[in-house]
Length: 114
Image (cartoon, one colour):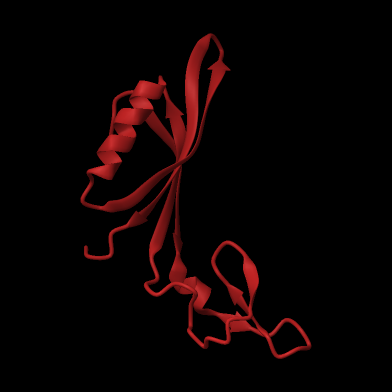
């Protein structure tokens, strides 16, 4: 963890929950809960999940003193033995009292070979 970065939220979401299927319509198509959205499965595949390998996704929200500090934090996460596919979802500069800060959200996956 960087000295100039603070996490405010750390959420976990696993793709194992997306294996549930339920019929929500009168026709024979099935609905699939992908974890983020419920979508109609028109593929004809009878897989338990849209993903081949269910994964644990993490969402990290927080603040940093600067964009440089956020970039260093992203680099540390990318080199981590725990996280893979580190993606910055957004960052925005804000004024908090008299300080310039950077709010951010990062999405990653936990490595499956742990």
